[in-house]
Amino acid sequence: MTANPHDWLNAHGDYLYRFALSRLRDPHLAEDVVQETLLAAIKQPNFAEQSSARTWLTGILKHKIIDCMRKQVREIPASELLQDEEANMDDFFDQTGHWVDKPQVWNAPEDSLQQQQFLTILQECMSRLPQKLLAIFSMRDVDEMENEEICKALQITPTNAWVMLYRARMALRKCLELHW
Image (cartoon, helix red, strand yellow):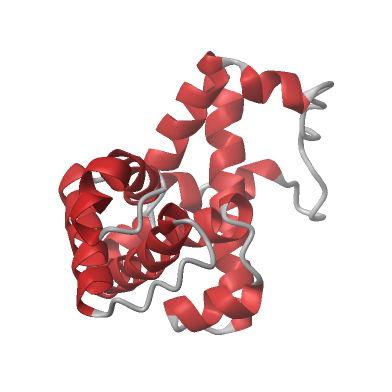
């Protein structure tokens, strides 16, 4: 790819925007973090061409997205952190702590993931998660970040991270079972 900073927007802008939008779910925030990424890259031109410009810019973008998520998490009112879907997790278990209905067996999840319908429903279910739960789910299960990195990025404890990840997964499971 091109290493000329003047060509980065044309060459990589759409890719960076889609990447940011898939994680932030807000077109305006995605535009902002892409702009911040390009500005940071131009201000600190330490691109050594050891990788492609796109890879280098994506690395900067990932950090800008984490910063944005961190800022959003701080600004979310506490009342929005608990939603109805989270509050009803007890519906899955009986009084002894066992499953009321065992999770469905998905014979070939790889095939299901390839179906556009499933991806659309999954995206809709993810959009219903509170921002903090979406952030931790995306970081852990989509970006495959380690728990230690996530805790550092979101400034939370490991115990809190696991609880939040559990809540996100359970809310997604409930949503997928209802709509898929």
